[in-house]
View 1 (cartoon, rainbow, N blue to C red):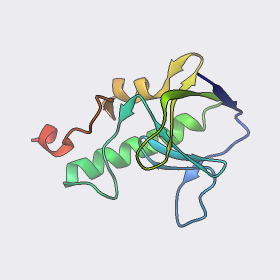
View 2 (view 1 turned 30 degrees about the vertical axis):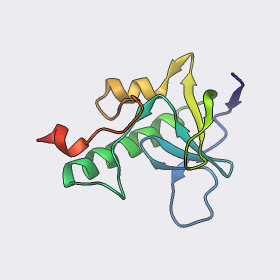
View 3 (view 1 turned 60 degrees about the vertical axis):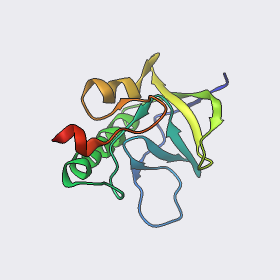
View 4 (view 1 turned 90 degrees about the horizontal axis):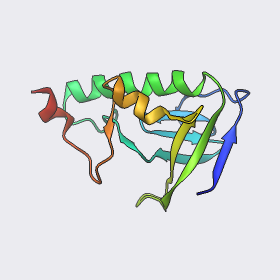
Length: 126
């Protein structure tokens, strides 16, 4: 699988109105130099399309944590064999020092491992 490393010189912000260049959309999606990237090994709660208040809160926490993690230094994108998802986003595992940032979000309770389909974060909260 091809890998792409980018340096700490990039500064991520939270995405706002277009154009989006290098910013974080939510806990599992970000833009890198104008390309939308979906973290392939996790599923994070939604923010703008949350189904309940607890999902929105968890999604906001995941988004802020991903922003923090991406701004901590160089990471590497390891392309997923699927290449792109159904929305055309690049699928990649994001690594720092050989460790998945997605796995870190899972360990912190801000995401779940990707299992082929999203779970209901609202059902998990009840």
